Length: 135
Image 1 (cartoon, rainbow, N blue to C red):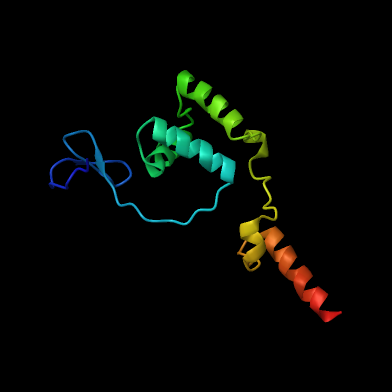
Image 2: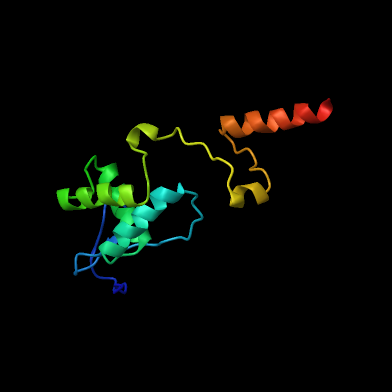
């Protein structure tokens, strides 16, 4: 159920308005985030279990992380361990920022990813392609 803005309520620290119901009115945007396939499967399963959207689950995880808090209770952490086994997810936080995209049926047909500002690997690949074309 969404809360319609009424003009009543107080402003939150982040600019979202808190309604009398205790809920916050916010503006959401659609995004095309790329994420590791097995991580996404576990996240979708957790969202389904808690009867919420994937977006709501991710917002909760991020807001807890921003506060330095664990977003899950013990029962949910146990469920995540089981879901990681089901979806063969062998990654943990030590893999953070170390993931590289491998070849897959989807990526093999797609054009090469363009280098983005601050993307060292993408810039190195772009430079490699340019020098390879000169020989």
